[in-house]
Length: 212
Image 1 (cartoon, rainbow, N blue to C red):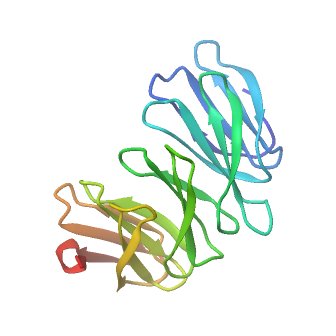
Image 2: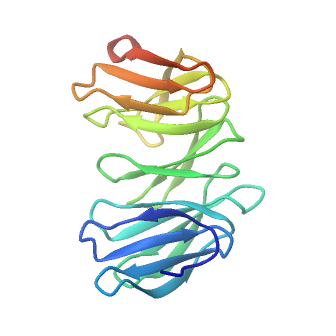
C-alpha cells in the first residue's frame, strides 16, 4: 500500500478499523482503511513527525513532531473525523517518543537531546515539563499508574516520578547500566527491569526502594 515518504511509525485504534501511518519526510499521517486496504486520507501534521499514540477510547491520536524548532510540537488528531484538532508545544526539543499513562489522562513526550520530559493533560490540554536527566528516551508505569519510571540514556539513570499530581513530581533517581533505553515493570509492581545496550547488561530495580 503506497503511503507518504519515509513511514516510521504505526498505530491501530481499538476497533482496528484503520491504521495510522506516520510519514516522517512528508509531514503527514496516512489513514489506511483496513476493510479496503486503501489510503482514505492524508492528515497534515507538524514537521518531522516521528511517533504516534492513540488514546484507549480511540477518540484521539497524538503525534510527536521532531523537526519543529527550537522545541518540538505535538499534533492532536480527532479520529472520528480524521482531522487535525490542534498543535501543542512539546516543551522539549526533538521529541521522538509519545506514551500515554495507563488511564490515558497524561501524555509523556520523550526523546534524546534534552533533560526534560513534556507532559500533556489530555483532558484539559494543559502542557508542562518535568526535568529528569539527560536523554529521557523511554517510560513505563507501575500497575497502579501512580509511578512512572523514566530511562535516561545520557546519564545512565532511571528517574521515578509520582504521577498522582500534574505535572508529575520527581521522587528519586537510580543509577543503572550504560545507555538505558528500555524498561518494564513486573506484573506485581515489585521490580523494574532495565535494558542497558552499551554494556550488555540488565539492571533490576526494587520498586519499594524507590518510594519517597
